[in-house]
View (spheres, rainbow, N blue to C red):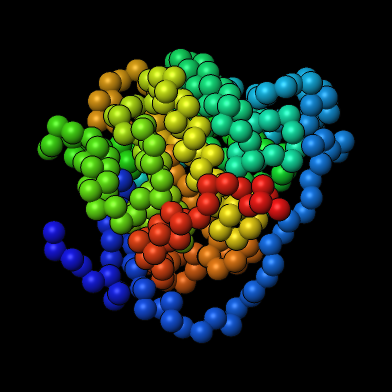
Length: 348
């Protein structure tokens, strides 16, 4: 295979969305005169009396949490989507366009312990979270009014998380949202031409090249995608073409827990801090149609760039033209690959 020189400015295409990103590796040589700060390693307790997610505590709506021992799921007290939204459609001269959107928002507490994140939980406990995600996906997706279920986690105050208690969210809605719709378009286009999943062929190529692989087990591969936008962005892809969590077998549950534990631990180890990110899995829509082209994957979008508190911002060119990055995906993949899979707190 021809060797390409990625030391100079070039653009890369995101095969899942059809969008492009500008990569400028030579800019890493510029002197840094911006902020330099230390990690925020605030000590957290197993139980926090003022936390509205801890077992037995009162939430904002006055309800009392059960004294749960594993995961705990409830409807968000401040849901972005509502089941009983009034139906309407607005279209004024094809210029002012809007329509109502119904949905359900759920909160998933990963653990009763206030001080643990996925990176610090055991794989057995993470498997419990996966089983909870699957149960919620099945329940919400079987609702005839729900056509897409988005499972995600915002970790850290930098990502807008208002409560450090380990939790994620599930938004289930009437429409297929923009990112999933863009991916679906690319999945369908590739499958129609090749009769294979685009991620099947992409994963086969990445495993052959071994340039951006961070970690792999029998069922999943963690890699920095060729088109990554965020400095240490990763993608978890199932080796088997699976449409959703509903198709996981027990081995895949365990291996997915292992992959989640490994990448979140490596993230924490990078800057010796509880590493912020937004992460979420993309699964087939739940509208009852057959999505034979879909391939399960999970995105991790971490904002950190140079240290525990130095964030990459989307500004200027990136807001007005297209995303841009300095360090190459190959560089960040190698950094993550070489990091230990044992959490840094275990070595203290």
